Amino acid sequence: MKNTLPLLFIIASLSACSDKPAPTESTKNLPALETLVIAPTKVAQEVKFDGVIEAINQATVSAQTSGRVLELPVDVGDFVKKGDLIVRFTDVEQKARAASAQAKFAEAQAQYTRMQDMLTKRLIAKADFDKAESAFKSAEANFKEANEGASNTAIYAPYAGIVVSRMIKVGETVAPGTPLLTGLSLEQLRAQVDIPQQHIGPVRKFKKARVLLADGKVLETSDLRIPPSADLQTHSFKVLVNLPSGDHSLFPGTLVKIAFVSGETESLLVPASAVAQRGEVNGVYVIANNTLDLRLVRLGSLTADNRYPILAGLNAGDKIAIDPIAGANAYKQAHAAKE
Image 1 (cartoon, rainbow, N blue to C red):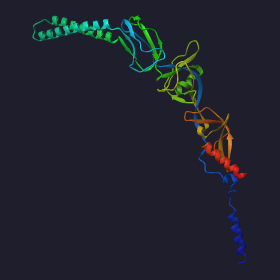
Image 2 (image 1 turned 45 degrees about the vertical axis):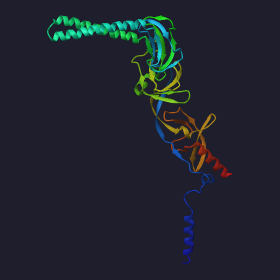
Image 3 (image 1 turned 90 degrees about the horizontal axis):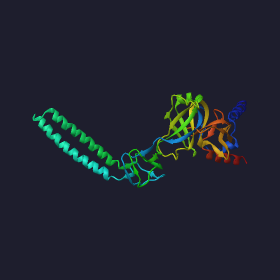
Image 4 (image 1 turned 45 degrees about the horizontal axis):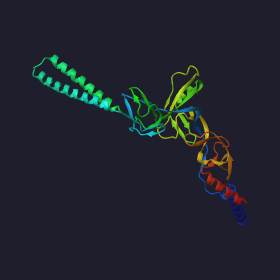
């Protein structure tokens, strides 16, 4: 019995000693944070080139009939909706021709109907009926042509867009084929890019690109038009990159950066929202060894899913705070507790 009490005291003392280290002051005061463990991820390798924006729909409207310009409600720089009136000609001559053609068509149609009835009753020869049928079809074609000429005295916008040039004025007389207005649509745009021959292989293989806009917005597309041969003078390929439809605040003739997928590699990625920016310096809050620290990092280009590749500053397995504001507050609390 005498040896039992010292033995129990020793066991109790050993059990009180845990294998875990005692929490530091910073750990005691560190609030719960949403974290992310960094792991290698497959990301696309890219090559970047300058591209020039151009409109897919750009056309010059020409006169389909002769006449004097009576109405011209649009000018250079005006936006027009699809179906808006853009030019109107005098139509007296065209309407007169259409009325005359209609009268001749009605007469030929009546004669054709009579001859059809007489042929059924075998009162005329088939040759006479064929002549009446030919005259009817000729009058019908002339009537349609005259109506088309009358309708062409009013010209409407083929699509919504902007007028970029005007070649006529009110009061001028035009003939068929005379250029009138040139317009383009901003709803469907594409970029023309000259790609050197050493890069065309991967571009043709992956057929994926990102258009990097000045405001930080990124447009993804896989709608690429790659020519089968290179330019004989520059030895480069003129690739057309069709942009997604919509208003992207881009205008024909302007330059944009376009990143083409050229391969795949593994990289450490962090969400853009997890990066704390301090002027020109970037960092993330790292939780390691029961402490929280701001670690400076060097970032690559932003990916399509809004993540940054880490070029330096982090290793695989590092745990970071997803919310840099919450991380900054926790960092201040932890260090305030130490003091």
